[in-house]
Image (cartoon, rainbow, N blue to C red):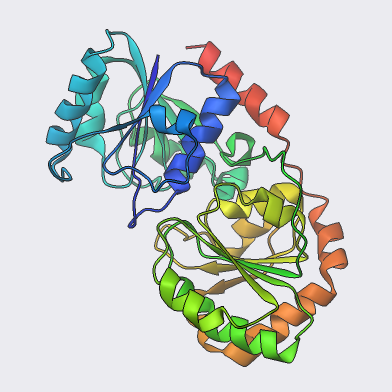
Length: 337
C-alpha cells in the first residue's frame, strides 16, 4: 500500500496534489491514502475525498518530527511494510530519516536539488536536468541517501494528461494556480477586454485562490469574460484556447503536452528556472511577476502571441512529452526496487 504526505492549502495550492495524482495514475496504484494538513475545498469527487486523511484535527503541526510521528501513527493502523511518497516544501531531512525507519521505501518529489534528503527514490521533473552537468548530478547524489535512485527531468514529468470532457473554446485563458492572487491579472484583463471586445476570455480561479469575490464583482459585467471557479481539470479549457497566460507551475507541463502557446510569469520562489530551461519544454515567453505592471506592453505581447498562435504551436511541435513513455519510465524504476 502507498501513503502520500503532501502540502495542500492556501499557501501551497494544488501543485503537490496534482503531482501525486499523476504518479498514482502512472504507477497504476490501487491502494493508497493521501495525508494532508487541511482538507481541500469541495471540488473533489467522493472517491477522491475517501482517499484523503487529515494528519491532525487540532492544529497544523510545524515541527518535522512531530509531523513524522503523527504520520507513522496513521500508517500503523493499516499494518506494515508501506511505500511512502513525500511531496512537501515544509518537511525535509529530519522527517525523511524518521519515516524511513518505518517504511519499505521512501520516495520524494522535489523542486530544490540543493537541499539535503534521505530517500530511496528522488524525483525532480525540472527541465533543467535535460542537460545537467556531471558536477550537478554528483552534488545531488552527495546530498542524498546512498543507493538512492534518481528520476530526473521531463521524462518523469508529473502532470494531468486525462480529460474526457468536451473542450471549451476561447481566445485567452488566464490562470494563477490553485492558490494565487487572481487580482494580479485585473488590469490586463480589463484593458484587453475593452480593446478587443470580440475576444473570448476565460479566467480560471483556483479553489484556494485569493480575492475570488472581489474579482467576480469587478469583472461580472464584462460580456466577453467568463470566470470559472474551483475547476478540477483545466485541460478542457487549455484544449480549446489559442493562448494560455499562467504562473509557471505544474500547468506549464500541461500546456506543453497539449502544445498550447503560453505566456508564463514567474510568480513564486519555486518557479526559479532560467529561460533556457523553460524552452526545453516548449515555452519561449517567460516574464517576471513585476512585468505585469507594464500593462500596455503585456497587452501588446498577448495580442501578438494570439495572432501568431499557429506559428508558436508549430515551434512547440518539436517538443515531445509522451505520457505513455513517462508511465513506462516510472513502472520500470519502481518495479526494480
